[in-house]
Length: 122
Image 1 (cartoon, rainbow, N blue to C red):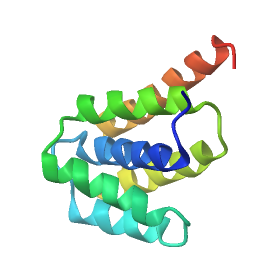
Image 2: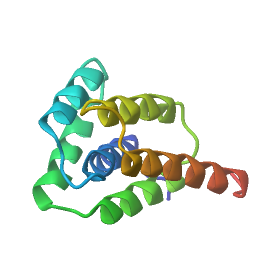
Image 3: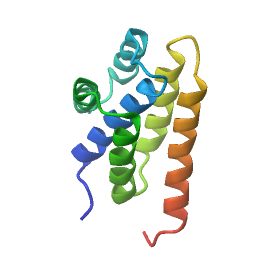
Image 4: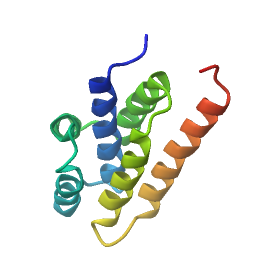
């Protein structure tokens, strides 16, 4: 069954958390940048709630990533991923530029999505 739009936004928050935490710590500058970037998005509250939930639970990067990618794969292609990619880059850049660990995770997500959508019967 296809996840709901709300579940997709939960996944986006999880993925943003994973990228912010990829270098071992979620920086305050990353949180502020996230709030700035998503402030006008209609689902900002859901994305931020999910980000904060993952952070409060101390989820590992891999746990958050796997949960998010599974939801995104099940949801299917959507224009929301363009918004997500911009948000991921902005959050990663917020603390002295994009760290290698963050860049690798963002690229992994893009590659995993592309691979899945190219080889699935949507």
